[in-house]
Length: 178
Image (cartoon, rainbow, N blue to C red; front, top):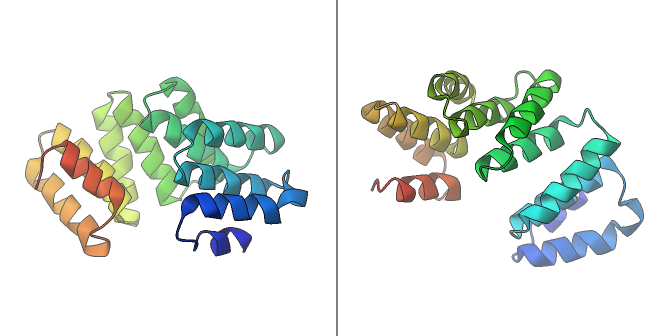
């Protein structure tokens, strides 16, 4: 509840300060650690986020969201890709049908250069939940597999649900697609 409340602050740094002050006595609770990690991500402090997620995974090795978030972050930053794959594989054991974990699996395979595996996982995630982030990832894999028209259609669907999604916009900008 606290996390959803502080996420409404206009300035993400204010959210983090408010969250730290209010949750001071509960800093080792898994949900508090996870929320704090995600708030650090929101303010652009990836190293702090990764450190908190590692602390959380040490404390609760079956915390699927932490495993997934850390694995995705490592992959997205092209860091420790084999570790990223191991973390997301662990997350999928605990949340086998979660489209965001399935998306992360596809994204790790994409970063590893295994486009066929990436397409397989991302197709599954997209068919389950065609949100803008999954659309961005799936479309990029299709684009790299030379399925340009299919990629464009996937991105169009992502735009229908949220035309201002930063990940989708960044993907299209980076690929020089208007």
